[in-house]
Image (cartoon, rainbow, N blue to C red; front, side, top):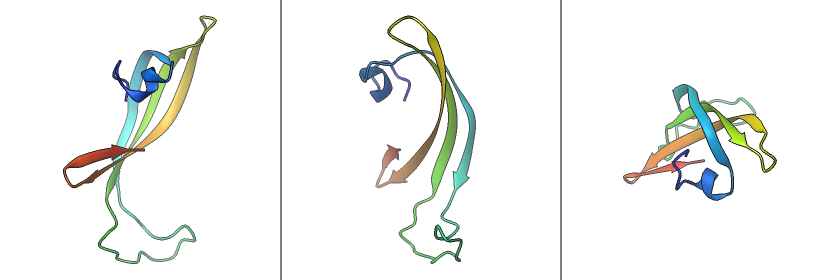
Length: 81
């Protein structure tokens, strides 16, 4: 994510500093309305990362940003959203 050739930097955001605040394995616990899990075998477990990073704006100010990244593994590939 924070690689100099990664998507965040390619969009024009210069990252000065970054830190992963937490990482936790998650599974589908149910639908959005709070009902029981469907026991669907297609549900993929994911790892959720909470991150904090500092970018430099065009006028030289440092801005701290926070975000959540969900990482899924499927077929030998990892997808991060």
